[in-house]
Image (cartoon, rainbow, N blue to C red):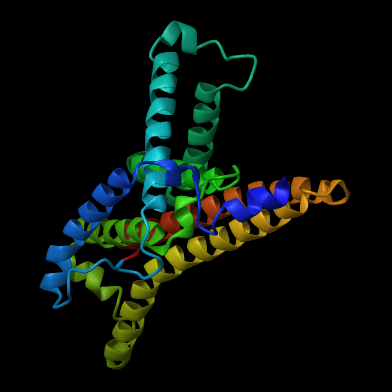
Length: 278
């Protein structure tokens, strides 16, 4: 039974593969339509290729849409709970979705406050908090059999990393002004300024690359290992192993969310705080 099931599921199969082909084709054409003007402006051809490589399928996009809808539902549940101040002031005696949302948001805010300061943490909580929720739920989706984590595709993680990259420099310039912000790329020694500037530019460009590749590689590996050990669960002898791997998978899901968000806090915090030291 287990072998037959394994053979019936292709390598990149998910429950979203059961959707009508017309929906897959519609989403695929929509993505190609979005890529076309950008590719043409860069001198490329508007064909069915992702900007950052990888397999061209829409399963990870369906997964991402599913995560967004799930988070929307969680948000409405939390709003209903905390919208009533009299009800919200009394803590619940069990872990519910609103309670989880409160604890998760509070944990992110406390971490941001320790890294960026309280004012900056409150200001950037919508950005970093959204990344935390989306990445955590996307990572966790891969723990359920028949689902692929959207974050195991470089295009998904690169999109989020680019948003952090843009926010870092936009708010850095907004906080300090163009001239003062660029001075931080020059270094303290005048005759070394051109060399330091090149090094700093390269290091900043590398940041979104490392953010996206690290998250993608870890989630792809975690999902592959989990799938391999789940295959071994067909034998009662190997039954304990998937349980241990699931536990490690939960750790990976949490740690990778923490790493992405923590580095984002550091990048943005450094960009807006350097103004105080000059």
